[in-house]
Image 1 (cartoon, rainbow, N blue to C red):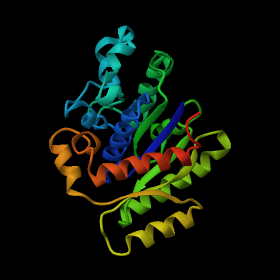
Image 2 (cartoon, rainbow, N blue to C red):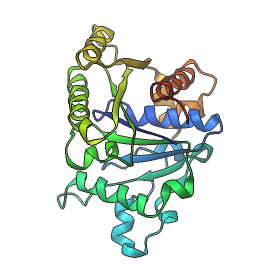
Image 3 (tube, helix red, strand yellow):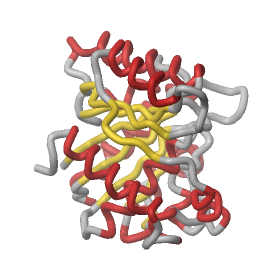
Amino acid sequence: MVRIAVYGKGGIGKSTTVSNMSAALADRGLRVMQIGCDPKADSTVLLRGGEPMKTVLDLVREKGLKVELQDMIRTGYGGIVCAEAGGPSPGTGCAGRGIIAALEKLKEKGAYEICRPDVVFYDVLGDVVCGGFTMPMRPGYAQHVFVVTSGENMSIHAAANIAVAVENFGSRGYADFAGLILNRRNVKNEEAKVAELAEDIHSRVVGSLDRSDLVLEAEELGKTVVEAFPDSAMAGQYRALVEAVLAAAGGLS
């Protein structure tokens, strides 16, 4: 089982990227689990025809000790197992602590043993790298961290912060920093800026995605590009990207 955490600044296209990678792997017949670790709880919506799902934290609040694994997961495109950590009610708690509680509950209920995924993706908000937002990179969860970034300054800043966090936690047996994913926004000198970032953090750009109107068209249909436009060049880019990500993670074991 390969366990990968994908971080990135809010709005950078991280969830869209992860969902398309999940769909591409499902098309290959692999068992995939995608866990959204963002209080917005919209990581898996494109895998489920645009339909949102109840979060782990909402279910725990509703059912308490009676909550079971089958309550917390749903099946999406290609049999992908979907889960959303969720967050606290607005103004009532820490979103980071919510991620900790949700991931611990999934593990407690045997999510990995019962679902037996070949690949697990944790889709994590990367604007902050403290507390619970580091939970997916802790021992027992993700083995490898990738960051989605563009050449925009705030996106590069967030990616650099995540890289520093991973380096600081390295002595604790946390996940390793496996590389950057360039999601182009067509800003000036974009590739050079991201290449410079990779050099500064002693990493590499493992793959890149073009900006495409097909992404928005697919989202309007409540689908990934891989599902909605499987023969498109953009779908091909997502397939190539997930192969590069798996290779950087050491491949399937």
